[in-house]
Length: 267
Image (cartoon, rainbow, N blue to C red; front, side, top):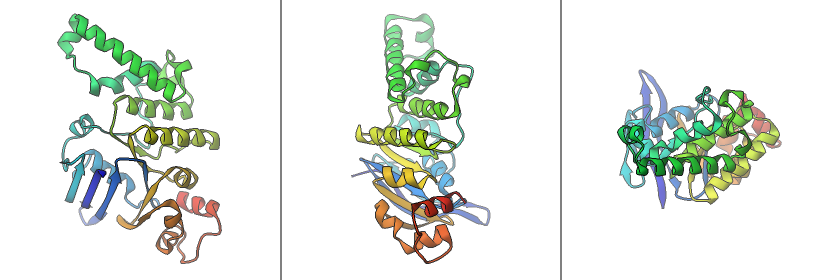
């Protein structure tokens, strides 16, 4: 069963075709990774899925509903949430309050009720606080709950953004290069969290240049190059695919090792 289906999705910018007739499915279980060289159209693809851009052609179906061209807020409210290449936090808020912001999609009390603070609004506030603290624990950030988000090291800021996204209770989370700027230890911790997210029932769609993380975390991989899908399959199948090797290394010869493939991915 599919959580997300892309059918012939295309995006043109004038004469440039950034995403060209891309079709694939994201199952309800596991981690799906989208990889490709720089400029392959990966982030544009995420912008189309999340509603930041409308497709020029094609259809996007989420949970059986056509979401093509819907506004990002409605797509997020339906349970499809994303993170970004660049960390986007409320730096003046505490770590805990940043995660509370992510809980708003699940809230039912309106602004008027929140101002009057009836019993129902107070109960909801307590529920939001509890969920936010659970998400901080999930991301290993409980000890920093009361600190300003701006004071966290970069690696923990990435984890905070992930905790905030998960606080919304998504059915599918789009992770746009979550390992960017992380060291080896931080990337390994991130990989464990991504696997745990998937194992607990949230589908994961991941864009990532860190091939070690992709190969150790993804259940299936989609490869794009110049806006087109050129391969898909298990990590092992994709790693051995001649079209993928050519796209990353500019040659039909297999990579000597994973380190060579990773270096090419960053190049």
